[in-house]
Every structure is written in C-alpha cells, then in structure tokens.
Length: 342
Image (cartoon, rainbow, N blue to C red; front, top):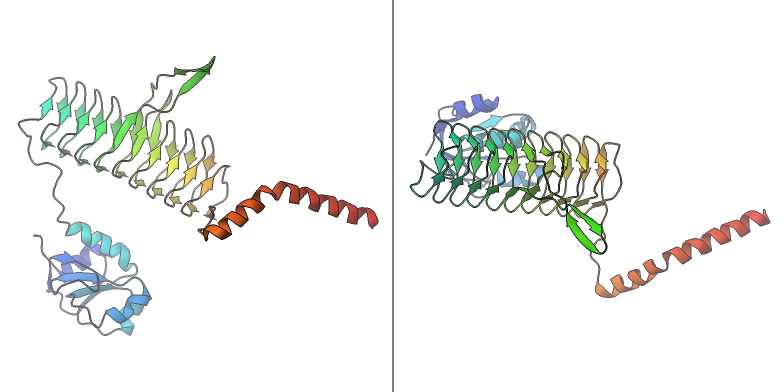
C-alpha cells in the first residue's frame, strides 16, 4: 500500500498544507467513511456539516471552506474535486488486468510485443498486431490481426479488438467492450439486403476510456475516430464513421448513429440518442434521455425527452398529442379569421 505525507500530496496537486505536513496518508474516502489515515474532500457546501463528525485524517478544501471550518489537517486548493481525483490516482489500489505472460496466452510469431507486456490466461494476439510497452491485457481478450495498442494501455478481460484497429497510449478498455465490429451497412435490392463490407477501421487517441460492454463500430470506408481524452461510459453504441473530438464525455447507454460528429469538451447525458449525419459543435451539454435529430451549432445546454407521469395522465396527454396537428390547423384558421376581420 502506497503512503505519502500530506506535504507530498499537496506538492502533487499544487495545494497549501494547513496542519501537520508530516501526516501519513494511505487512502481516500468520503467524509462519512474515511479513516484517520485517509483523506476526504469537500466540494459541495451542502455537506459542510459532515466535516465536524468525519474521522478523516485530512481534507481537501477550497480556501473559503478552509477559512470557515476548523479542521486539524487540510490541503487548501481552488478545485478540491480535481485535487481528489489526482490524489486518488496516486493512491489507487486497482490491480493490473494481468501480471506477466500466462502460459495459456497465444501470441502469433508475427506479432510484436513491447517491453514489460502482461497477458492474462487465454489471451490471443494475432499476426501483425503491435503491442506497446507496459500494456496489460486481461484474460480471454482477443487482439486481431494488425491491431495496434499504444504504451501503458490497460485492456481488461473479455475485450475484443478487431483487425487493424488502433488504440492510443494510456487508454483503458473495460471488460466486454468490442472495438471494430462491422457497422450497420446494408443496401436494399428487391426486398433483400446486400451487405456492404466495412473496410474502414477504428482509431482511438491517447488517454481514452471505453466502458464495459460498449461497442465501437469500424468505419464503412473511412474510419471511426475517438479523439484523445474522451470518456465513453458503459453500454454505449458508437456507430460506423462517427467522429468524437477531444475531451468529450458520454454517459451510459447513449447511442451515436452513423457518421455523426461530436465536438470538443461536450458532455452527453445517459440514454441519449444522436441522429446520424449531423454535427454537434464544441462545448455542448446534452441532458440525459435527450434525442438530438438536427445539428447543434451553438454551445450551451440542451434537453428533450418526456418526464414520467402517472399512467392515467400519460394516456390523456397521449390522446391530446395525436390531436396536435388538428389543433394547430384550427388555431391557424382562427388567426386567419381574426386577421381578416381587422
């Protein structure tokens, strides 16, 4: 278990120590659960009353909260939440997906492995694949022909990375993710469907996280691209030829249809659906359960969806919704009559 003094943690996050700079910290916790050798954070004033009863050895506090609350040991910093993330990374106890190369792993003689690569049981690395330094691949994962994985990337168990896909450095791919399966490409002819071979690939930039059971389809002709710094949550569907720009975050169960383009620093709420062949500009926040069917060209917050209601109320509103077109026509007619009288 890693241990750091409070001063070392303050230096790491760029904060100021108040109290015992030599206090040893070996973990993180919430205000309610933290123990004397752990550090907690306060980022929301509604939890200020928990400071007095907390058993945490130290706290990450904003200057305002530090001045208004009497605690023995703290690191004072402008953004306690971001500082907490940095400290948590430093004290992270999550094991690697694999350690060493298991005897049951199967690596093609035509594959290239970097230094300090770890492969779990029954991992398969196909011909032409290139695995960078310090990559760890969990059990039962499959890396397809000519796929590339950058250095320091973690691939958890049961991940499938198809042929020629490219994964950047310092990425995390969680269990059950499928990278590079065929996109939904079919051409109709005489009531039948003709499959269109998906000959593009998937390109994932550096420091991207792909959630569990998320699928990223390969491009039909060009590539599907997820740029550096993006976060894709669990059970998302990224269709073929989607482009996601840097530092965008997408919450669980979201669907991005084919060839849509998402800008930088966007935040897309869970269970949202983005129509195909449209663009969303930089710095857009889309609330959960939203359905986006046309381009968004101005930064800001967008929402849609129908809030839950009682079944009786929903049935009434549903019946009225079916009458909406008739109501619109009646209103237009009344407006015309009023204009004619004037």
